[in-house]
Structure formats: structure tokens, C-alpha cells
Image 1: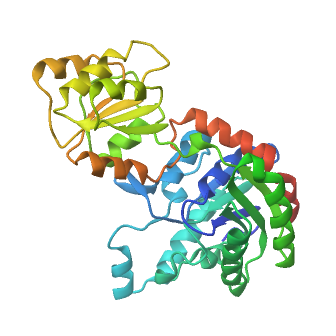
Image 2 (image 1 turned 30 degrees about the horizontal axis):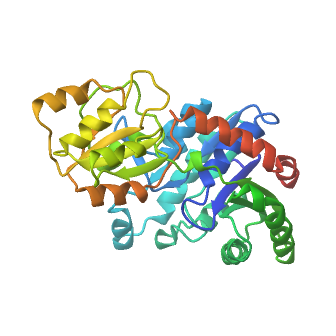
Image 3 (image 1 turned 180 degrees about the vertical axis):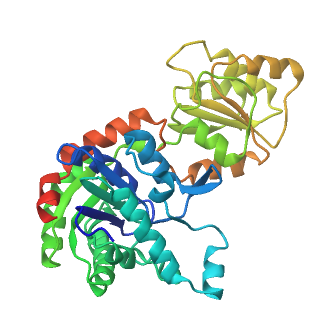
Length: 364
């Protein structure tokens, strides 16, 4: 296996702490020193099918944003599908899986100046099939950066837990990135977390501020997660949802909530609500709602439906009731996607400004 190309492994203390955000920004920052960068997510859990191959979503994102000139199938060598763990426990084939990862790494690293490896969840994720993040980092000869969420005691506690497993595998930790910290608290958290990590023999590499835009889903993501039917042809599905309003009041009282970025959730037979929403939605207006979700599988009458089909914002039809739809939207796991240009630009700026990339390079 290639042992000469510089590499780093991005891990986290738990799922959705910000590994992909850190990876996305670090690639842009590292390209100033290493023009040709490869990327690999050795073990992926959320995948899409491309040309009959299961490819992790994050690999697709990195390839779409940076055009890294790596074989896509090698950027995502193992996709953990629903039956994967059961099959492994019935007939373990760890040697074959390790071989697949190392072979893919060699292909990704071919003629590259640097390789960024992204883990999946905390250090122990994958232990059930003998491919924990710590084991994979060791296999690939990587030093590790751990990403954790904001706070003081909690991230230090969780980093320590992960540190133990990496150290058990003989993997060196370069340092820690703290993510999603409110801007006003950054100076205080930076000071105390740096001190706390130092007592554990770890470096603080930076603190990323919380940006609400990175947590907001697009209407397209909502549509996908709800399995909803799109009833019209809006100009875009990439509008961000800033707030959710359930149309359970009278239409007259609801008017005050029909603001920019709002996703209206209402039963499909509330024609008074739909007419009021349509009346406040204007072509090419920057103040339009993000979209409308009709619930209960209730399709409005023909005249209302025709009016909805002319609206410039997405109108979705979901089978679930309003409460279920609102709960799903609230609990959405928001992942950055290739079309999220505004988010990607912001992530690059945040990492360049708040992360000590020079320290990372020196540690390698």
C-alpha cells in the first residue's frame, strides 16, 4: 500500500458533528499547498446508486465540488447497506474488506500530493465488522483530526473517549476542531477548551462558529425525505427553509406567518389557507415563502390545484398528516449537497478563517 503520500483522517465524536463540513473546507484550504488532492470515505453509511454502484453521499459531494480526478468507486469502497452487518457476522471476511480499502486508497492516491480520508461517526463506528474508524485510520497509516460540537465539558469528555480507542490502535491524534459554537462564545470556549485539551495532550486546531444556514434544509431535501409528490414546476427546489408553520389556524390569522423562508404545512383540503398563501406569493419576489406542503394525501379541487400549479414556489403533496410531516422536517439530518453553492462557499470561508491549517500541515 502507498505509504508516502501525506494523508489525514477526519473523525468525530459522534454522527453529524461536522466531519463533512470540516473535510469540505479543508480540501479547499489544503489545495493552496497541495494542488492535487485525493479523497476517500473508506466506510460509508448513506449512499446513492450510480451506475449500479453504491457510492457514499459525501464522496459524491467532494467529487462534484472539487473534480478530484479520482475513481468514484474507489472514493467509496465500502457502503454499509442494511444487510451488511448480518452478512459479516455470519461469515466474517475482514481480510477482503481491508484489501478493498487499501487497494482503493492506492488508486485515490495515485499521482496525488495529499489524500483526505473521512471517517463515519465516532472512533468505534464499524467495530461490529472489525473496521472501526480507529482500525481504518491505522490500516491507512493516517494521523487523525477529531471534530466535536460546541461546549466545554462535553466535547472534552467525548474527545477523551475517542482518544482512548485511537491510542489503543496506535493512531496519533493531530488535534481537535470544535464545531457549531455561537459567535459570542468563541473566545471563552477557545480559551477553556484549549486548556482542557492540553491536559489530555491534545491541540485545539480551531473553533468553527454556528451558522444557521448550514443547518437549514432545502425544499428539495424535504421533498425527498417525505417521499412527496411535486405538484408544480418551480424555478428551483434549492430554497432554504428557515422556519416551519403549521396551518392550523384561520387563514386570516395565518397571513402574518407567510414570510420569506417559511415552509407552510397544511392539510390539502384547507382551500382557504391555500388561497391565502397563493395570494401572498408573487412572481420573482425575494420575500416569498420557501414552499407549501399539503398533508394527509388530500389533493385539493381542480380549480385550487390549477392555481397552485402556477405558483413560483414548490408545492408538495405528502401522504403523512401535518404533525408527522412537521416532525420529519424538524428531525431532518441536513447534509451539504453539491447544489448548495451558498453553503459550500460559506464552509470554505469558515475553515480558512478559523482553522489552523498550517499547524495541520506541520503535524504531518
